[in-house]
Amino acid sequence: MAVSELKQRSEEFRNDPHYEQRVDLTCAFRWVYRLDMHESVANHFSLSVSEDGSKFLINPNGRHFSKIRASELLLVDAHDRKTMSRKDAPDPTAWGLHGSLHRNCPHARCVMHAHPAYGTVLASLADSTMLPIDQNTARFYNRVIVDEGFGGMAFEEEGERCSKLLGNHKVMIMGNHGVLVAAPSVAEAFDDLYYFERAARNLILAYSTGKDLKLLSNEVAEKTARQWEDYATNVGLAHFSELKAILDEEEPDYRT
Image (cartoon, rainbow, N blue to C red; front, side):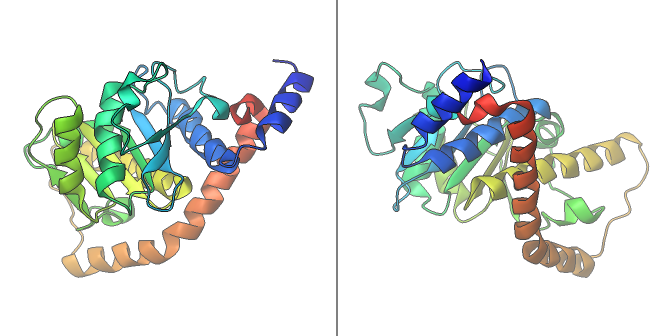
């Protein structure tokens, strides 16, 4: 797409009331692709745009993360039972999981569900606990819920079950399935997903050595987790701002 055409499309689209939210969510899709945490044209991210959380943006059905543009995101209502009858209906597992979460968990403004390699391996172990072996794993110390009741693909029944299990948690290890994060903003959700996958990588690689793990004490792990809570928000926002700046230089069509 020519620079002039990109500029024209971007200017026309800026009148959308959810323009900035669309841009942020699209940035997350593009970067999850770049980091190889995507899976085919599956997995879905959503972002509430209404006060009660029920109206939300979500990726269009069958669109690859690397190609999604801000204008293509679907705007749906979690309470609209006719959603799946729309010509542009979302993937049924997207509706089943994210519709349920946005109906039942108002705090889950941005929801990202993915099957990243190390997080999914951790979710497939008999014990999926994120053990505190370093600073990154300690970020999630006693702050993750593990779903032990996988009941099949995330159609509506499974989505309802997961939404009830999530409660007020921000991260859920979906046993035998993958990872789900829920946060107040796209930047915070992305940062949680990014760091969770890096923490899972560290733990799985440590397991792979066959050596005994050097666990942090409960006191130090909790202290580190609390430090992350104070530190992560600003760092996460700065991280995400930099990611958008990179896309602005290299893939500016994401904003259109």
